[in-house]
Image (cartoon, rainbow, N blue to C red; front, side, top):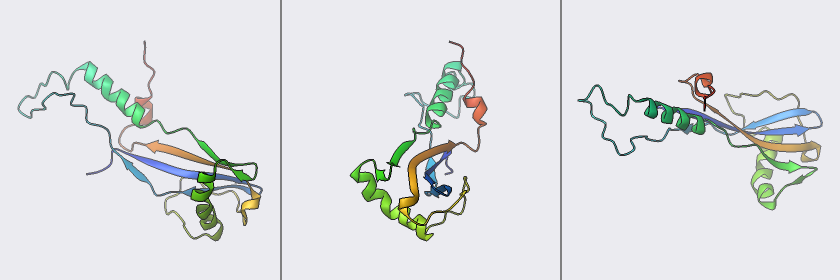
Length: 146
């Protein structure tokens, strides 16, 4: 079964030579089931619930929530990690970026410079993008009249 949307998570590494990115493997996302206790029958072509405006509105709201990325998280600032947990988790990743050990095939952001030491890093932010390849993003984010 194919994914409903994709989640791109990456580190944006601001350093003295520009900005570099560390892309994590793409994750697959799936919309939740909105059966709401109703039985979906293939026999009934004119299913009242699934063809209703309420269902379509609920489905669009669910898509909007699913495609809303998490807020960016600053994990490194002013030459130190924000928490010890971040340091433990991300130091090996930063070392891999410096040593060019891991290179993602499909990058969404290109590096504008490179760095050779964590001492050159100014700030590291973990960011996320969500993308539905089947639904135009503008149709999901259309303004609602309330």
